[in-house]
Length: 584
Image (cartoon, rainbow, N blue to C red; front, side, top):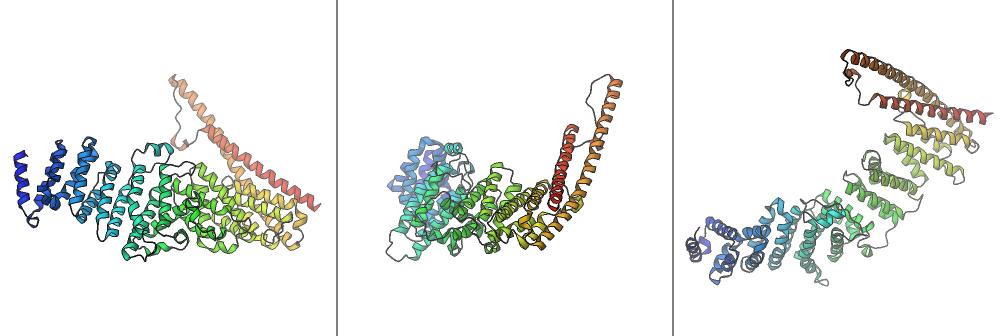
């Protein structure tokens, strides 16, 4: 479009009242602006916007120039000053409400490949527009923060220190800019502390709270945070935790008393994940801990935090599991050993959280999480009183369906029995209360057909437990009826275990013999094949003979299984010897 034609269009706009402008005019001013910028005439466009003669046009249709100006700023740094000045002029001339609508459209439609760059360009001008709103400012702030966070959540969260320092996708820069963006609105909520808040104040507070909770979920729940390394995201977490008390939002209220329910715009899953992250920042990272009341007992805090721990451990993401394990450990630290009553185990969270922890131990592929999980698992056991331990052990033996976990529980049962015998007597691990536990411990899940290798951990620990009981028979015989029942359970278990060992050894011995015969056959076939062809070729095995392991590995596995059966049998024999010695 030539210059004369542009001047002709501008003159027509000047002479046309606003109510007679057509949709084509709004599109045309946008096209003219984009063409001007693409041609490198940003200064010319700025002059047009600043020209007194064009103020009517700018006021009516100037918002249409925002999109090309923002695109130019994102793409071309050279025209930065002219484009920034042009947007600033538009925020002074155009209607704040119309500008807000245009900004929200830009945020909604921004280029997925330039999210951070676009947000950084928009935020200062969007802040200016919102501060200019005479009414419904809270609604505008809420719409803007929700739209911005929606785009921000599309950016990958840096997980390592190097990724955070590189900030390739600009998430960290956006977080810093968002803190600056929200500050005047937070100050607006704080300004009249001695006055009764207006409905507008309450609405603005609710929108800021919603933004904080959104930020706790994304990006903070996904980020690696460490108070020893004051990273950008850690500082962003500090800012969020400072905002909450600044807007008179009670941390205990958010964490323990479900005050979020009044904000209907937040879904349940969001509020649960957000408050779980809030608990982690408070109790693990100790951010804003100086504002937290000291009146709550460690047991009450643990009880409340179990909901958050369960939420975090129920997820499969490493960042969630790390925070869940850390929060679980911190919540247990100040609880006295052997103090948690059995009644707590009736609470759903006290059932679900240990079950989710057990899944981390058995299913998580990340070794350091399994190791951390095992430490927390033992710490939790240590805090339970005797009756609670008894109930927890029974529950785990019935529900874990994992020999490693069951073996670990059996080991803990043995420790409790030994402690009771040594003088820390309690009725739950001596006397009649011990019998239900022994029934669960000394049992084979599939009787004689039990897979001994799969269940080896539990079986070996069970045999060690039996040996311990027999070695301390003087203390155990104080109740003749109980000792008689223990002997009955022991005899039935060992009888079934002997049958199982015998059947398993016969099976694996037969497999080993078959493998040896197969290897001989393969060698013979290979020699005949090499003789007939006089060429060295790879040996081909029939499809029905192929396995996932080489013959050498198969042989090692079978040999290892037989050694394991020998070890089990030697423990059974030793238990029989101890029994005879005690009877003699």
